[in-house]
Length: 215
Image 1 (cartoon, rainbow, N blue to C red):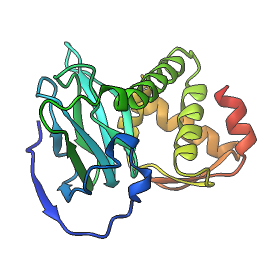
Image 2: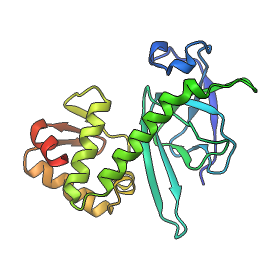
Image 3: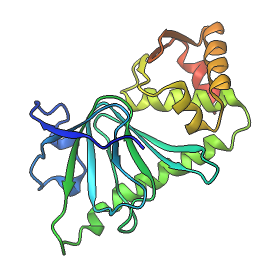
Image 4: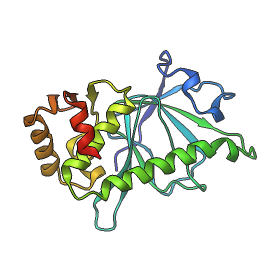
């Protein structure tokens, strides 16, 4: 695994306090911990109990399978919260995709915040169910289209979509090989549905067509 290297830095908060989950409304704004690209935020099996807010950058959540393969279960972008667990142990690894700033919120021992955390739990369950629906599709184009629609919605519905993750990451998230992911991107480009601005950014040219492919 990558070395876990962090440092606390002072930056103006890019994520408004009002965007935090309600459970954190009364918690003081925490300093930003900086994680280099590829560094571990927490590991599978470690003690849980904190919530993590992405200030900038992006995070991948994954598990290593018995045969050594990696299955990515989620990506988290700026403004999103992760790290919630149903018990006291992390069941996945969390890793910074690129240079990432994280605010870590811990709760005082003995304080019951289960009711306040329920909305986070339900949101996480909904995302997990949606991911399973995507993985259940046989068509690689449908999977990639659904992924791009989701990324666009999470970035405010803009036509230009940032993709901080690599094609390998996308493949490990969608259950596809990197070759298949690259072929689908090229096919969508050739059909005029998207423009490939660079390896980490696309422009959605035909939103309706992409939405139709994802359904």
